[in-house]
Image 1 (cartoon, rainbow, N blue to C red):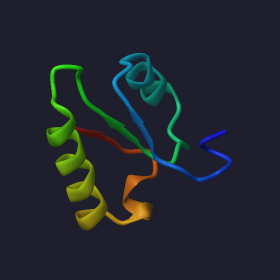
Image 2 (image 1 turned 90 degrees about the vertical axis):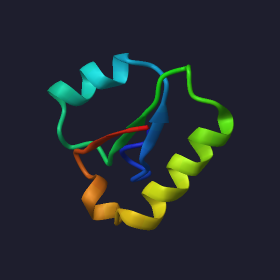
Image 3 (image 1 turned 180 degrees about the vertical axis):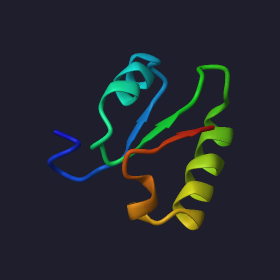
Image 4 (image 1 turned 120 degrees about the vertical axis):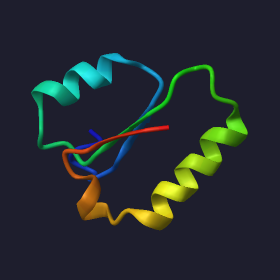
Length: 64
C-alpha cells in the first residue's frame, strides 16, 4: 500500500529492516528504536524532510 502511494514508511518495527534487506524498490524507510522520545522522533523526521529529496529515499533506510 505504501509503495503504491509512493510513501516513505516510518516504523519502530525491525521487521521492516529485514524487508529492506531483501526488497530494494520501496520508497524509503525511516526506522527508530522505541527508546527515542516523541520529540526526538519529530525532530529527526523534520530533518530528513528538509535534507533529503524523495528520490534520495528510494530504496534507502534512514535511522533516527
